[in-house]
Amino acid sequence: MIHKIGSQTRLFLQTVGSVVWLLLSTISEMMENIARGRAPFRASSLFAQTDRAGVGSVPLTAMVSFFLGLTMAILTGYQLQRFGSERYVPGLVAVAFTRELGPLLTGIVIAARIGAAYTAELGTMTVSEEVEALETMGIGPMRFLVAPRVVAITFLMPCLSVVATVAALISTALVSWYNLNISFEYCRDLILESIMLKDVYTGIVKSLLFGLIIGLVSCYKGLAVVGGAAGVGSATTSSVVIAITTVIGMDTVANIILTNVLP
Amino acid sequence: MSDQPLVRLENVRLAFGEKVILDGFNLAVEKKERLVVMGQSGSGKSTLLRLICGILKPTSGSVKFGYLEIPKLKRSLLNQLRKKVGMVYQYSALISSINVRDNLALPLEELTRKTPAEIDKLVDEKLDMVNMRESKTAMPAELSGGMKKRIGLARALMLEPELILYDEPSAGLDPVISSVIDELMIHVSEQTGATSVIVTHEMESAFRIASRMAMVYQGKVIEIGTPQEMRSSRNPVVVQFLSGDTHGPILEAAGQPPVEAEEEPAKPPRRKR
Image 1 (cartoon, rainbow over the protein chains, first blue to last red):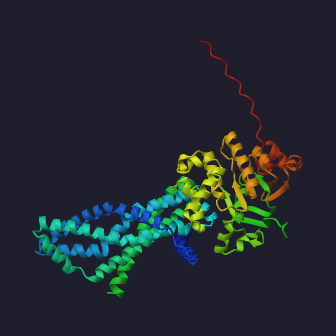
Image 2: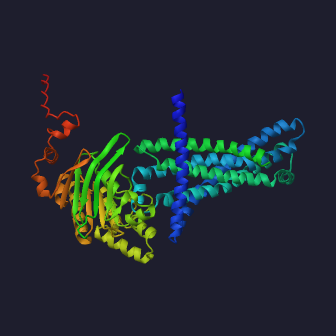
Image 3: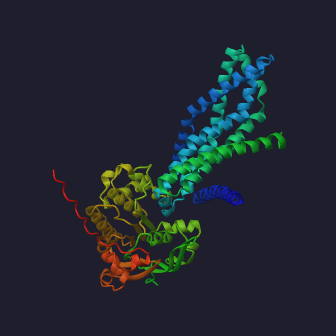
């Protein structure tokens, strides 16, 4: 039992160390290229990843958030109606999505949709020696492959988080109008009254952090693949599990810090 | 000074945990030669290529390119050195998401300041060299194994390297295409004057290409010489390897009994109708 705990702890620390090393190596390769008077990575590659991770993820993120917002509004409305406090529903959903559920839900969707794709893609490239070929040519694989992916996913997460929150607010407005007799204008006022600036920046900071985690974990798992096609499969599963678990864990840590230390 | 080998490995040991791949490995690669390195599967031949291009670092010993100690180089210097080394992979290792033209242009776009017109000209030149101009816009997945090998070779030539490393260049190819690749390697070496290190265990190819041959066995070079010297070697390991005999020191050392030719099983009597 103790041996198992020990080996699991060692594996965890190894993974954390490797992910941090990947981040530092990527930054170092980018800085070397900048020092040579060149762009840190290809702009075309960044735009391709941005399109894929961002634009491609809008429908799924919006749909999931729309339905979750709908459910949340119905259930909270059902409870609060009994106390005559249904006018708090739009504000409650708005705050929950802006600082918590928007980033978290987007993180989970992106880890499953894009993180898995990154791991599978880089894993296949590793297995077929494409990554090694880049290194042999003197082209840093971190700069060429990891940097555009991590930058794209990190800076797109806040945008997708906004999409998720807006989708949830639309569904909340519909439920408020149909079930709770709250007009769209009044609903908008209730939402704007309840959201504070700190809710917005909390959501943005969390989204950036989640994007960075998902990007780094998925790229690391892809580059560390061993064992052919089976290895790619297990690395992809493991990448999604680690990314989602870490996102939820970091969300808790961020909540503790932001509500207690920086109220 | 000019007689110094291009690459020299001295007393190299490489181990992954308890598994020793190379031990006391010594090899000197002379300029402009075509050195074929042969040996059993898993004997460390491909590992040797990865040591030369700095992908792997030896546990101990020295790997030198000219005067430069490869394992001790900083990443930026190592990347500069890698411009002088081209590698052709066993399965080509072309970047699957971009077409042939972009695969060839990649090292020039990333590592040089050439204009797109200059790059296009060089890409066409190298494609002509390997007779693959018509596949310029094809994706790697649309190419056959032999075509991929040729494109892989063209990519390795893009930065006009001093040293070309070939990892099993004719593995998995039919005899005709294998001969085409062999002739291409000879042609490239003669035309560019580049030094070649070719790892293979295809004996027919090896004797066709080599100006010198080295036999790797149990983590060491046990025999090195011209193809004629290898043919007349009396080393039992070399003799067994070249003949492909199942009786001899190779299988005995591996703890495997020699494979006896099975007698044809007696046919069951035909049943009467």
